[in-house]
Length: 434
Image (tube, rainbow, N blue to C red; front, top):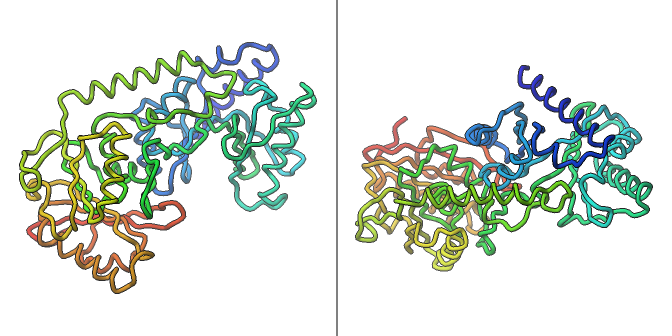
C-alpha cells in the first residue's frame, strides 16, 4: 500500500508539472531533466524479482510491482541510463497521463487532451500499442485506432498537418495500458525491445532471448568469480550475456538508436555524458581481468573470469565467435568443439562452479532421440560434474524427466511464446543431494 501511495504522489507531481509546461509553453526539457517522473520497466514473466533487484542496484526508487513490470521513479537522465544499462528489462515506459476511461469516446477525449506536439513535429511518425484485459465497452483491437485518431486529429487541428503511422520504427511509440477503469498513457522510450542488444545479427535455431539469458544468470546466482560452462552453446547467448556482466559492459552500449532520440525534448549532451560515463566504467572494469584457460581443455590455469562454451556443431561455434566479437568480448570466452559427454570438464568440478545449458526441446529431434539426449546429459552430470551446480532450461518438461535427477529448484519462464522450465541440480560425489 505504501508503494502505491508513493506511485500516486510521483504521478500527481509529474502531471502538475506537465500541465504547467502545457499552459506556459516552457521548454519541456528544462523540467524533465530535474523532476521525478514515473517509469515502468517491462520484463519477461518470471523475471520480475531480478528486474526489481537490478533497478535497486542502479539506484532507482521502486514504487510498485506487477506482472511482467516494475514501476520506479526517475529523471530524464534515468531514462538514458536505464536504456543503456538494463540487462533484464524489455522496455522503459514513461507514463505521461492517466485518467478514468470506460468508453471509446472517453479514451479518444483523454488521448486528444495530451500535448503530443511537445514530443514530436507533425511530419514524424507514431504507433500505438495496447495491453489490457477483456473489456465490456470495447474490443481491444479498436483501442489503438481510437488513440491514433485522437493524436492525428490534435495535430491536424493545431498545425494543419498530421503524423503518419509507422508500425515498425515510429518516432513516437505510444503505449496504452488499461488498469481496471483507468487508462494509462506512456511513451516507449526504448523503441525496439531492449533484448535487441545489437550483437546477434545471425542466429541458429531456437535462440534464447537475451533478456531471458541475463535474467537466468541472475536467478541462478552466478557471479563472475565462479566458473561458468555452457556445453550446448548454440549462438552463444548465455556466454555473451555472462561476458557482458563479467566485464561490466552495459548491453545498451552496443545499440545505435533508441526512440527517445527522435523527440524534441532529447538532450543530446546529457545522453552523451551518461553514455561516456558507462563506457569509461566498462573500460575500468576490464583492467586486471583476462579470460580463463584450464589445463583440462586448453593447457592453462584458471584466472579471475572463467567462462567456457562448447558445441558439437562447428557452425554454431562460429556464430558464437562472431557474436562475442560484436559484443566486444573477442578472446574473453574460451570455446571448444565437441559433444558434452565426450569432453572433459573445462574447470575442476570439485572446486565448484555453474553449468548452464539449453538443450533441444524436441522439434528438431524425434522422441526416442530426445530421451537418449536427456539421459546422456544426466549420466554425464553424475559421472563428471560432482561439485557443480547444473541448470537446464527446457521447453519439454517430459523430456527433462529423463535426466534422472531430482531438481532442487524449478522456475517457470517463457522464451518468446514458448513455456519453459528452468531446472536446478546440485551434484556431490556423483549423486544428487538436496
